[in-house]
Image 1 (cartoon, rainbow, N blue to C red):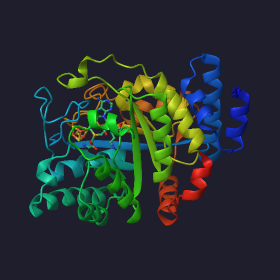
Image 2: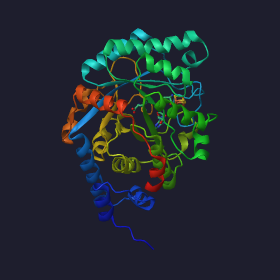
Image 3: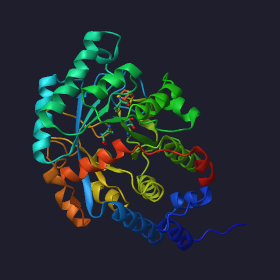
Image 4: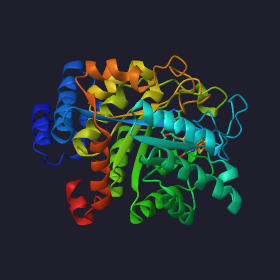
Length: 368
Ligand SMILES: C[S@@+](CC[C@H](N)C(=O)[O-])C[C@H]1O[C@@H](n2cnc3c(N)ncnc32)[C@H](O)[C@@H]1O
Ligand SMILES: C[C@H](CCN)[C@@H](N)C(=O)O
Ligand code: SF4
């Protein structure tokens, strides 16, 4: 039997040597506080090597909560009558984006349910979506991320031309059996293929993992491998938050210890990528621990008093103004971190756009 030694793994991580699957599993399963702290410290050291003490801040606009899908984990699934549905106009979205930009974020994440108004075959509806992206780009000049769900390849290209730099679309799991239970009646292959396509047209891609929905440690290792093969520039994980009125409401709410371990492992495996600390899981209260685990982007900053919601925490900390640049500063300071400048962020993404991360399939096989 091979014995696994934490110090040896940390040494390998710091020297950028490839970890074996068994070593990754060992890190993911850690529960001893002292051992975990050693791993988080390693993650912070690697973050510091690539990003120093800088973090990036993303504004979040959930501009339409209408959706044609019925994901079993999501509050905004089409058959949930409990959630509040709204659709902001292009002018409203541009106005919110401008205010977010003035507050100091460097990216606007335009998220929607798979709203049939924008995603049907109607050119008129598609044009409306493109107009939102154009107006946000024009009114802020900031990098833009779109999270519209699965769109046709032609539409994605138009969204890029309208000003979208990033395409965010999370597979949630790379276990096809589990995927079927989460993303009901949605094609696994289509969801994956559109991200691969996004990369071929020069978009930056964010891939994501939902944890606490029946996934095993082996599933998570498998997901990390798939994420690596995609070459996503931003990788995330979020703990499942049970939602009223949905099929998965009854399952035990997972704690977020595993999410923190995954963030640290992601930092070790993908040290130069962007890894979010989302305010959408535990609000401001969960920020420090995510940053301490190695995250380097704060996502889901939402302006109060605009009638906007979060995804997995639809109201938490929003009206209080805690999910704002000002609201997160104390947490950043307590982690010894500061916001990067916009110039630093744009430099990072321009570099990646100019030199997309290429994956050497053969080398990849050797890595794992
Ligand atoms: C609401 S969707 C928005 C974009 C688009 N509708 C889609 O599904 O790709 C964004 C992500 O939020 C996350 N999410 C949704 N409900 C969640 C929940 N209850 N707990 C944790 N994360 C959740 C999922 O990872 C999902 O991919
Ligand atoms: C899940 C959302 C992101 C969609 N691109 C957002 N609530 C977040 O936490 O960053
Ligand atoms: S996760 Fe996205 S696609 Fe699924 S129900 Fe929620 S908003 Fe719709």
